[in-house]
Length: 409
Length: 96
Image (cartoon, rainbow over all chains, first blue to last red):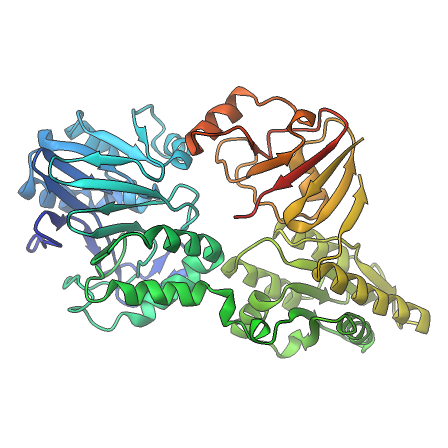
């Protein structure tokens, strides 16, 4: 059903599509009532700009809405803030219908566009500060990469004070009343979207928020879910708070945090964990703690990993592998910012002892800093071996506190 | 041998001629971000604080990718594209 064409402002209309049936988004996200693929049409005195398109199977309704508002030859620009197929699905058809329109994408989108469209099309690149004019309307572009693909960007319609944010500030929440002050309570979906899509990129979120600061924003028009017009600053502050490191307890008490996660069959890996923790904790300015993975659920894993400056994982080797809870712990990194954390691994073993190396390799791909080789001990650790564990803990803690690592390769 | 100082991880590493910075970063466990690893996505753009002369010259692909990112690419390199090509200290900064 087409429904009314919803004005966002005098010169901006919603021309996106609603998808009340979708229940799983991007494999990892659930939505209890669907979502929307938001697209907007901006009209100026000299022509029209189309902000993003929709998922391909929703093209028909997108074009119907668009056709109620403009002729194709009025379209001066097509802006893609993000190239993911749910926003670029109708691009090729739109460009055929409006061949005079200039496509605008970010610099990082260039190679992605070729990968998605599989044909040569002309485009202009927009970096921060580039503007386009529709006569009496000016759109300024902002480079806001990695939110949540490398290509993402935002734009600001100066006269209407509308921020076209891209996926940032989105929600997978279906409600055709569209505006945040008219839809149902979507707070949970807004936070859930942040946690699953933006949380791994929170430094980039903070960079984007710094770029937005110089604008007086009255409306945020994201690519999914409600348009945020009641109090845009509230949503901006929520993103700032969730992305800020300052909220962590360790910052309140000015220390760094090292977490030792372990599992143990016969107390041997546990004994190693205790000594490593003891060694690490002897370093000033750092608090080391240990956690038995047998009793840690996923949400607590994610929170502890996020706050830890150093992550040390211990696992025995069972049937030539690390134990499943150790892999489960590392799989939680998909929800978190990668890079920068110090990592290390250890474990006691009976036969083959691959687990510490396997964890080390996995942590390398997850962009942990891995300045020390894994430590592994055959069955019951001796006093000498426990002393080595203590020194291992000290070394990791010192590096976490800023000691330079010197290597030769 | 050249010395590469990966500033954001405080890692100093002595390396031989010909290795790419990507190979070095991944070997020592630096927190540098990589995307496509073939010079297309620009994820691994970094600033060379000093020692540009000890790196291989920019190839065409890298030049084009950097020009898409900034009008001043003098000190920028893609870490997947440049390799050690001299003996001296190279200081690299790569986090935001």
